[in-house]
Length: 344
Ligand SMILES: C[S@@+](CC[C@H](N)C(=O)[O-])C[C@H]1O[C@@H](n2cnc3c(N)ncnc32)[C@H](O)[C@@H]1O
Image (cartoon, rainbow, N blue to C red; front, side, top):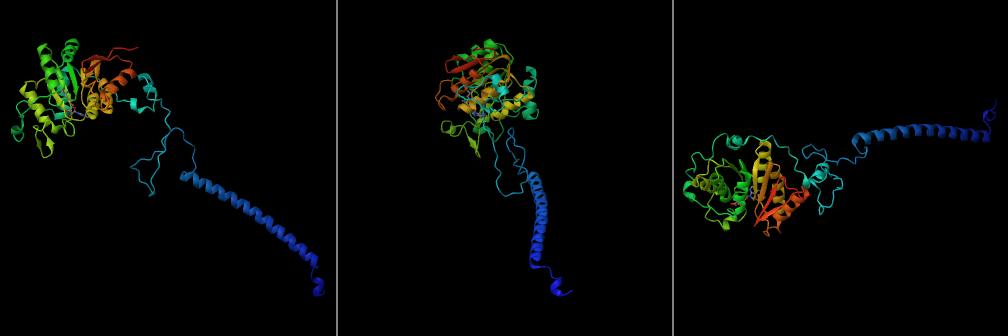
């Protein structure tokens, strides 16, 4: 056969070429589809495991522990879910608070221990705070003695009629005082209780730092290496008034101190709140202290009418009474709330 004869005709060649391209394209299409599917699947799997794709969470914010090691140098953004809390101008009731997880302003949830018997309150404080010894032993220390005045007492409404009225009425075995300063009200209560023949233990909670600038008015209270001797002067006053057997103290901040009293089961039949006078301090102290009332106890405090922090104490007391549906009584500058009073 001649060579030309063996060559297929041109149109055959073209046709063949066309069919070949079609087959190649079809084959390539098949391969492309398979590879694409595999690729997409792989991508999805990878994205899922890296966390780019996940089930949407409406319940929990995307917290990451500040202590967990981060592989990224980029800051982590935390999505806080939008609060659906109520308008605070119409505060929740105590019952609402237990159900409303979002309303942290109203949540003081620590469960207190069972109350220790009143006759063990003093020893509990000595054990927990002072390693079982009395802080009055060998007081005053040599270095502080020449810096203290034999008696330096100053208070504000610290001997008002409300103290005697309440002590007569409640006959408290334990009094908790939040905010003590130089001990004016604590010593007055110790004397009243003694006069009434009561065996009352008074637990004073104060950080004994006063407040920034308090030495502008109390410059005679000395400072040693930046440490103001308010605690020592308070102790000196207590010793001078022969009240050290009935007055014990917890020298810490009101927040942590009240939490600890709750944890240790140290409750009060009568509780005076007279520490920070801004709204937030008073609000937190009152809420924490109220949990430490023995059944039927009374909580009270000073400065209901002062203008400090735009009447911070009054706003805190009013809100507390409203939320818990309790009644407020007023004695001069003092507010008083009986545990079982009801405004309903
Ligand atoms: C007004 S004085 C107490 C006066 C005292 N109740 C009286 O009538 O004699 C307030 C005291 O609260 C204390 N204080 C204020 N904020 C405090 C806090 N967050 N923790 C502990 N003590 C605090 C101060 O150190 C100060 O001694």
